Image (cartoon, rainbow over all chains, first blue to last red; front, side, top):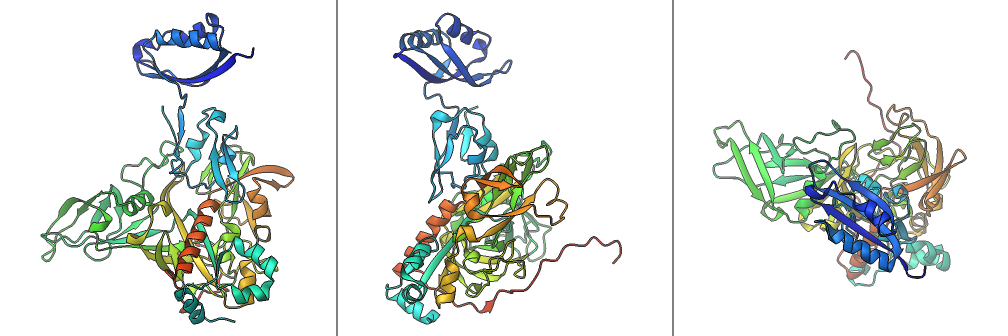
Amino acid sequence: MSDTATKKLMLTFPRWERKKPIIYHLVKDHNLVVNVYRAQITPEAEGHLVLDMTGTKEDIKRGMDFIRTFDVTINETGKGVMRDADNCTHCGHCVVHCPTGALFISDTRTREVGYDETDCIECLACIRVCPYGACSSAF
Amino acid sequence: MKTYQQINDRIESGKAVVLTADEIIDYVDQKGLEAAAEEVDVVTTATFGPMCSSGCFLNFGHSKPKIRMSEAWVEDVLVYTGVAAVDVYLGATQLRHGDPANMYYPGEFRYGGGHVIEDLVAGKTLQLFALSYGTDCYPLREIRTYFSIDDLNQAIMVNPRNCYQNYNVAINDSDKTVYSYMGCLEPRRKNVNYCSAGQLSPLLNDPSYDVIGVGTKVWMAGAQGHVYAEGTQHAGGCERTPGGVPIGGAGTLALTGDMKQMRPEFVRGVSFRGYGISLGLGVGVPIPILNPDVLKRTCVRDRDILAPVVDYSKEYPENTGKVICHVNYEQLRSGEIEVEGKKVAAGSLSSYHMALEIAHILADEVRRGDFRLAEPIAPLPKDTVMKPLVAREKP
């Protein structure tokens, strides 16, 4: 399993693609373990999905090729939540609300708030609590 | 013993020894109090956090023909016009016209007075809409125009209450989320929020108001402002530790400064979900080291400062005055405190990071000779207490 990898994606579905069972096929046909962070599929509206796929590099490549057969916009940075460091005042209010420690005090003396996006599960708690609007969501 | 004049002479000559309230603790430990008091001229203190009782007077100048504004909005945020013709007061907590507030609870409060102040300082172009009833001398009855801070004759921040000496630690005893001016409080005591720069905070470094008074010069978001009065709700006569540090709100400062000299990163609009709008403001106060006693008080440490833990689901709104317990800022900054045997996550609304930056900026300005100190013209009251509002049935 040394060639196993995980790839995080954000997919944007136009209205005409939203009914297709893409994740089902990623799991069944391409042997991928799919972890959905966040989804917003609204009838008659554009849809959004943030997920990661774990599998062999070959399976991930085949899965990516499969997704590309749809009219879906793929954001390979996989970031549905953004933190604007310039807007952050480092008050630390977000830190206790972040369930995974993606937001953390990176320096205990200067109380600087750090952000490790790989730990972010897109629960949106930071967006709810940040008084300065430093965190925002793509959808 | 030193005088203000001697300290200012040393600042003028570029020889002043200046340390931050963070640095002075170890410095005095190493040097000893008496020797350090001889050597050090100024200790800089600072804070950055939401300061709701903030706002500014703006003067727009006169249009042709002239208008005596009787109602006015900047970016659809109502401003107070009950002053002279083209003067207005813009308050930090004012909501934007049409904001649904908490109609769809918890409201988002995305834009209001604090954000207008931020945008003004950032030099953005804003919309003014004003109405009038028309007079012989001010015939214009309506104006809509666009302006930036450079177009204004004056933009003077006048804040009735800033720099609370100490503050509550908010907790939620109920089983539903509390949205407050102390941030988001999860149910069943899952988290607490505090709001103080602790050992860096101005009035905690001068707990009995021996050197900070009316007339003290302050660093106000980069501008050189001053204390114009005791702040509203100033209550110097509160309970204190044996070391003289208040264990509740206590003192406050009324501050004023020229917004045209301010730096936008230290003037920030604040949105508290479910509560409303405020202004995040950075303030620095230099403490003149006149004698060893003044220096000793600037060596206050987070562990020496106690703050009351108060329930914001019932006790605070009902104004019962009940305090669950006291905790110190060292415990709060560890990220976890203990409340009646239960461990509770601790988060901050005040930015120690920004406060530290301000303390260093101010220290550099004093060292360079750009920031001289001012001797107070009147002391802050030491023994006043806060009176409640009594709802009386008859006059």
